[in-house]
Amino acid sequence: MKNLLRKAAALAVRNGISLDAFADAAWQAILEAKPGLREELETRAIAAQLGELRERGLVGSA
View (cartoon, rainbow, N blue to C red):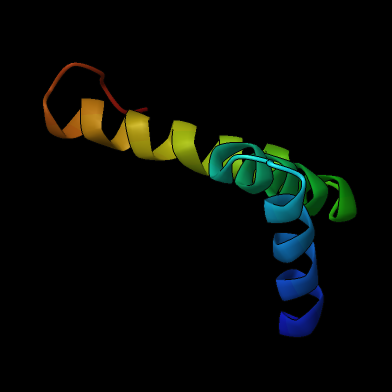
């Protein structure tokens, strides 16, 4: 796995791909490879935000 990542990184550097573009492409590839991951992460983020709002007394709980 690390060897494949090293090769991909070297290819990106040789072709002038920025670190941000490389990282974004890698992240998108992970999301595409694991169906449901994007939704799971969004659900976790929403739950965390809701928890913060509840702690601050801005949202009630049922």
